[in-house]
Amino acid sequence: MTPTAVRYSVRVLELFRTLPGAGSLRGSPAGIATGESMALDRGAWVRFEARVATGRIVECRFQAWGCPHLLAAAALAAGRLVHDAAGQASRCDAASLALELDAPAEKMGRLLVVEDAWRALLSEAARVQ
Amino acid sequence: MGDGEPIYLDHAATAPLDARVAALMAACLADPTLQANPASAHAAGRRSAERIACARAEVAALVNAAAESIVLTSGATESVNLGILGTARAAGVARRHVVTSRVEHRSGLDACRQLEREGFDVTWLRPRPDGTIETSQVEEALRPDTALVSLMHANNETGVLTDVAAIAGLCNARGVPLHSDAAQSAGKIPIDVESSGIALMSFSAHKLGGPKGIGALYVRRRPRPGLQPLMFGGGHEGGLRSGTLALHQVVGFGAACTLAGAGLAEEAARQHALRGRLWQSLQAAEPLWRNGAEPALPGILNVGFAGIEGESLLLEMDGVLALSSGSACSSASAEPSYVLRGLGRSDLAIQASVRLSLGRATTADEIDRAAALLVGAVRRLRAALPPGALERIA
Image (cartoon, rainbow over all chains, first blue to last red; front, side, top):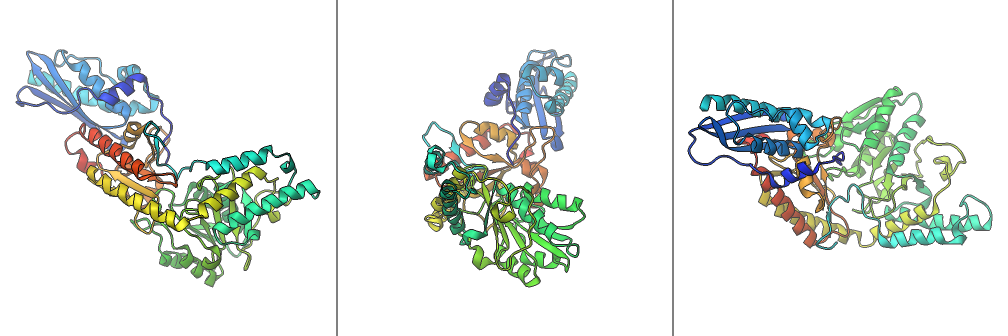
């Protein structure tokens, strides 16, 4: 019943406590791309929404269910995507997220779900632009 | 506790050591006249033995037992092991069957698994969805070769109570000893081992305000169940538990039992009311559900919040509210609670569940603040959920 003690990096705690970019985009659905990935058995579900204008992601939001590392990773990815060229963003793979968050190895499976959602978003964003 | 301190709602894991008990233990340790081995025949040894006898009587009084029926151990885990392994191994070659449940504490589960490795046949009862084990289930499971029935008095995760008196009556009629783990219930609700007919019952000191590292096994005197010791070397505790007793621990245990026994029914009613207040306040975070049902210990509430992941909720509460998660999925090897699984809950529902357990020091103000903290955290985490998650994570 008592959870295994988990150490959280300062970055994870900062992102988890503020969840920047959490929620969904408001306004017209035109120019909005989405990317989603789910692995409920691994405790992970992530969805990104991005507004694409003139070939660039100008706004990005995330929605997620999962552990603090997953929520922090989704927030981190949503922030990184803004201003990237649609279809060419490249810094939200699980390895780079894990590095910045100082995530333990057992969280890698969940961070891969974030990566899958990010890749799905990029693919759709390329079509929307 | 003050406003700045975390609210402690994890008494089922361990209760804070009562300050009066701590003072008594410290006095024992410092008293030069209480340093002799209580097993020694000289005057100083007899003085220690007398203190042990007084404390043993206090432990016995909490459950209306005779002092001679109390075997002091290192804690409930040892008591449960002695009760289960000791009884089954003493039963002889004609009785090689044990009845227990899938939702026992790990000490009981692992002791029964050890018996399986030794060739015993174990019947694992599955609780009803509300967490109860029915007497009829035990009746159906009993066989001519049953050596032992072992069932928790109160489940440590849900607080659900088993009617051990009824099951003891059934077992006694068949000549089968009943062992019950009362680590959670002793000192929380009235227990009368004499009238219930239970053969063996396990207790822990640290769940009721006493020190860690000490517990007891009640062993009925008439008819006395067969019992083989697990430890050898000195023949202490009637030959059932060798090893020099730690006087200050025993004195602390006895004092904690006396304190817990004072106004027990009133305290149970108070905690029951506080738990109801907590459950009512948490309705602001619906959809939610309760794991387990009445009859249950007054101080335990196991609740699931739809759409919530346990580790995130625990981190939200870190430093402000101490509670336990229904899941320990934060490491690669940990698994969701087998107790909640035993109740038929899905892994997702288990991940969304937490246990809140109250104690003697819990106040109404703490309950109100804890509920407000939980509702706020649940709302914040839900605000970030993907569409449809609230319905699926339940």
